[in-house]
Length: 95
Image (tube, rainbow, N blue to C red; front, side, top):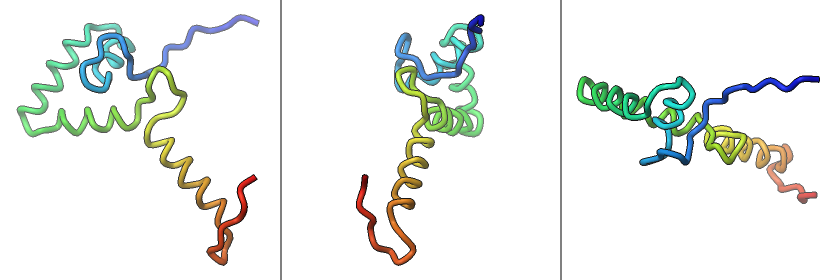
């Protein structure tokens, strides 16, 4: 079977300044990360949308070393805690 080279949107370490969102988007789209940074800076100046977009990207884009994002890690942890507690509210022993 042949393997397909699938591009994945991830926060990168190469070119990272804060969290790697802009460098990850730039690498995924194939443009310079500084163009993404400039676009977010302009969006921030005109209404503050750039900060929100960056924050959402940071929460939803996984780091290149991980398979899941920060939000997915929190959801998985919450589900694990919920499954460890039975309906009476008592903790079940972890196996």
